[in-house]
Length: 548
Image (cartoon, rainbow, N blue to C red; front, side, top):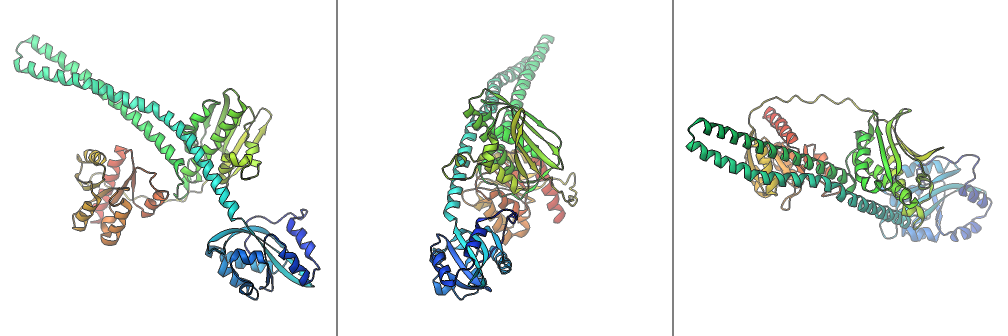
């Protein structure tokens, strides 16, 4: 069972454990060798010229095969039987390399275990001489339980981070909610006075006669205009508060669940600012953040995932500063281009613990296992081809993250949409009557709008042949989800499926973003941006008319 390697070869000057083992086995006869490997606490497969000649009991127990099921069989057959399907080609390639001798570095592979499930095993291959004959060994070390524990630790750490971020989220939302509710309540207080003045004006108009009456009417109109102007200003303030809430919720959604969106060119500065807003509650007690975001190239990544990385980093640094018991320290975050990469540098005048977190080994129950945020951040950064290093300067310490700039392919020109195509026919499908009503009021001035709060009733309309230029459909509904409705339309009415626009509140399924993205259809996020709703519907009406 040879395998592919993901790490580089050991340096010639270094003597690895596998080299020592190889040297120790040289010159043994077959019988002594078999006695020895039966004492190994790990599985061992022995083969010559690609055919298995021995498997110790540990290996037999691990894969659930008997001695006769392994010995005498080609190793290529065992690869096909035991390896995960997408790792078999690499296994065959590595088998050929193993036959040429030497020690191949360890690599992790998924193997079928005795219970029929795939486990994680570390495989190391080496060639030794047994009774004068070159012989290959593959040592199989089961890592399944260790990897499961590490995954549980990472999940627990992620949940703890989310708990801390959620506490900060509640604090962060209170300000815009105060702004929003206060403005709405004041507007509600002013409206009765405006209504009263209007009624008085109507009564005065019925009895008006002289110049004095006209002057009184003019004064009343001025007062009404003042009241309505104040109410308009308060409603504008309320809308501003609501937009702030929407921005905070967008940030929180980025770390509330793993995103499955495809990587794309993104602005690192946006991800850093989102992370700072989410981690503000953690940082405000221990740090005064000075942020500088300069112009820098885009990087290839995923906004939610990159935001998660920065949140993990900031929360861990804040926790370490809190444990030091220091007063609020100046913490600088600088984003910019550096040496052909996009760099994010975080600096503090005291040791912020990043060096220890980056270099500490991952061990369940150990110090690093309890504070893995920086390590998770490093894993995400390295996954995007970047690097993360500790900064140890004379007057400060911190961390530098470097990400390769994205190569932006030239995209085809977007189809031209007519500026005005007349009124379209729009079907709104949303089980929330309030949201459906808002969409109706937003669009009814420009289009003929039909509202259905039952997705099944809407599907019957469409199956019956009712014609619509655009179908605005909520992605999550109890009777029939938007994605499921879309799937039925693709099967039964494919031309209607090309007119669906999803409306989503987000965070209802781990892979929802990717499933919607896979449809290739537009998606509008709640809370709704009215201008974007109108623009998207107008564009889709124009496209529908051009295809009719």
